[in-house]
Image 1: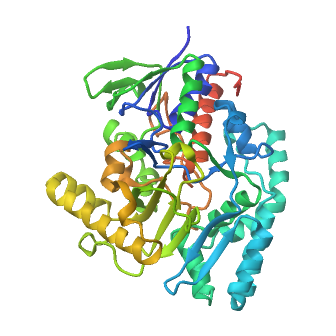
Image 2: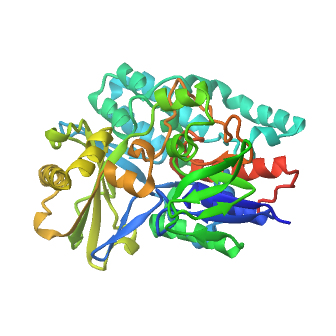
Length: 497
């Protein structure tokens, strides 16, 4: 008789785990608290526009690279059209100076040396690492427990040429590296895209993926991509129940035996996987009964990715003077009453994807990272009227910024939509409204959390709360690994497709 598995959350991690387990002979049901799948990989409709809340690029777009092969196990990758941009983005500092972050490493090196010759020593070191790690292949095939001795030795041998580079750059934060630079424009480049606390290795790997043309944009965006994965899950026989938030994970004699939904319905299971928010899983659904000093320390001390404010604008007509992406230094504070401390705004013009806007119109998004999640969440709970006023102030400030620094568009706006950290928390339950879970910092390096909890059998976790670094590949890998761990324990020969 097939073992029954309940997966909490129909985001990418949950869908990945569900597909692989269903294919390997398990009977899987995914329960999702929202009426749609995708989790953070989502889009929503506003006046004919599809506002994309996730994908800027997808690591795994190159058929010759290993992530493409993993994605192709759960989604028909050849059916997706990818766009590889010549320019990742353009950074503009407060003085209006610009640095184009080209995806070609040689062209980027030339651009940085031209704009910041005083930092030649550090620029060459940085770009040497980008070129070196463009040949590095992350070990993504299976969890460490599944390696045989010979497989482990081959893995060590394959990693050997890159260990020194990985070790050196993983220990340096973006802030530490930027502090060595003399050029204000180079400092802006380093600090505008990634937080000061993050390991600069993540930045280097991102540019390496871009250089390999392995980080393209999938036309159709988040909704299309998540939808194709959900279609695969249903096609292999998985059950997906929407509007089914989980109140409690049911435990008997130290084993997870099912879940109780917020509606009161109970679902029995032989195995439970939580691909939902990590904090809510451990401290609410399980009541904090299965934790230890290490896990508590993660949630007390580890650095999370920030939350964000996203202003989306529907524009009547094209905006020819804009590039597809720019990161622009703020010249004035945004809504001082909320305590926002952002230094840069990420602007994206989505004309490269015709599926996101009606014909003849343009979708533009402004993205501002923030750690003021408590302010927004508390305001939403305590005073909805003041919450609306605060959102309106942010909209006014960002529109004024756009008019001053980018282009006059006020008279062309036909749609306005703003998402705050409270929006993120409301729809995804993500702790602190973080958009990618745990951040890779020099202190953490590439260490991952265990996908099991102490004292609890038949239970596994997946998602970016056990796979540091964030992004869709982390969700893909952690869901796949959860399935592999279950198969390993049950002595089932794991089949990937």
